[in-house]
Length: 154
Image (tube, rainbow, N blue to C red; front, side):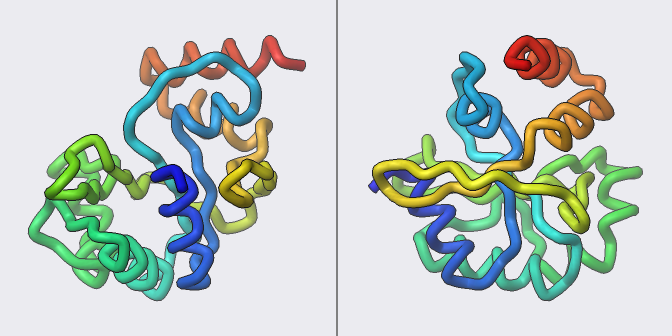
């Protein structure tokens, strides 16, 4: 089982409403894109964050930051404004290539997802229109390149 499938399976088992949103999502939509880490968005709630934290811990990942789901939920605005936090990173201490970023500047509530069936099972990615909107609003150069690639798929 791929690491991506393992992460998605763990989140699904924990009943977390998630969507893959980074380079993997761009690639699964059909654009050429390389990436190492897995970026996910969640519905923004303390319960979702706690379930995600537990699910990721269950597959051997640990938080890179000395915070927990409760801290992040309560102090999100401060972390974003004063510490420029964009994502809460989890990594495997035994394999540093295995990393997951929970995007903290995006709320999945009300957004559409697309199911992509892979050999290892279903992967839920952010729907193309919402992914384009998310990436465009970030303004980061790589995200704007992703927008161009996704728009060419039309």
